[in-house]
Length: 448
Image (tube, rainbow, N blue to C red):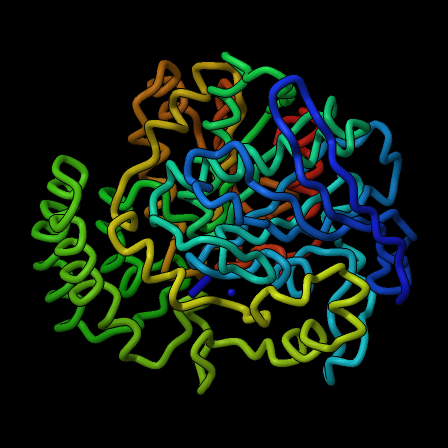
């Protein structure tokens, strides 16, 4: 996206043969955010100590984890990453796919019957530093940093909570999480090949990306088509504007290609040119970039999350969630962090996806069909273009009906592309039941 009651504080230090891990988390009173069935919940911080990008040893990532409401001892473990870049995963927990949502006036919470922790242990992670309640040194705006820092966060969490360490692990990202999820999962994938002393072999099974930006060199080709020739027949721009977008597309793609070849300033040029020519025309319509059926309105995010902000910034909530007093005030999306990633924006990360597929990690790419900004057309196109051993067979597969007409799906040898009908950028918000069925199927090895 462009986006807890008295408790027992646990603070300790866990030493391995060569590392000292800082731990600080707590069990949250179930009344703070209860789902349809009570489930254990943890929140707080773990450091990224061990990462070469935490040079000052001061990065502390905030998380909120909810155990599965059903059979938590045998449930898969899911880590959720909201994109932005700069938006809080805690926002997603409270407005998309967590066990509770915040009531209208921001004074309490109500249960979400389609929470992703129904059958999975789910951890919502605010990252990188500066996002949500997480804090620490300035980010360098690279996915190498994102992967390295998150890897050590996960190591520290699993060291402290070994009861989850053997569970099948799935990394899910939304929006700019199309960069984050492949980067973090691939760092875990590589880390398992050569574990540091004292590190845990993490049971990585799958990666999921929802309406993500993963392969901009292909995805930017589809903005003009999504604006004018989408599946809902909504012409969001005039024909002349559409023609101008089509005309600008080859130059944009050339600039993205140069960014991936040369890096640096060429990436800044690609970012400025492509967004000016291909996304700004849509923004100028006043429509919601996350749902072409809706007006954006006056809120910069096109959605009103003021109730979530009210609830998360009260002292009682901060105390219950073990938010440290010196961390920054919570905001849904941090614009400074967003700016840090300007040169990362146009980098392609599909190669990491292909590498993991070849290594036996399953991949789910899903997209709501009314999202403009990370649309289903571009996401499907890059999965078809992906260079991996199963490419020919995947492309030969037919799109099949999914979940009684809720979408269409194509799958082969560990790669699945799923279109969710009548859903925008945030599929769990727009189609909550279908999103939960998707998650449960993917994380239990069922054919989607």
